[in-house]
Structures are given as C-alpha cells and as structure tokens.
Amino acid sequence: MSNKYPNGYWPKIDYWLTKLSQYRVEQNPIKINLALTKLQYFMGREMNKSNTIAGVDFTQQLLELDEL
Image (tube, rainbow, N blue to C red; front, side, top):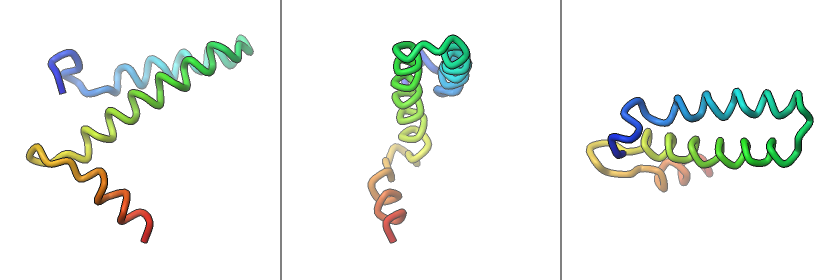
C-alpha cells in the first residue's frame, strides 16, 4: 500500500458510507450507485491488504476455504 493511505482504506470507506446514507435520503439512484461502486472498490482494497502477511497474498486460499 502506498503512503497515500497510511491509515488503510477505512477513512475512504467511512466517507463513502456517509455519502451513501446522504444519497439514500436524497433518493438519488445515480449517486447511490456511485457510492456503492466506490465502497466496493475500497472494501476490496482493504480486504486484499488484510489478507497479506509478510508480503504474501492469501486471498485465493481464503476464498477456497470459504467454499468448503
């Protein structure tokens, strides 16, 4: 992960969750879709970061375990 996100992706996730709630109140489906897309992106990045130990990505192995 670059120094662009020293605290991980949680600040971005929190931001887009707040925006999603705001857009829901506004009943704006285009903005809701934008917020959902951004949340999927940053959640995916955070999950991939969390599945890495000593530089080894265990994402695939964890997905295979989920299928058992």
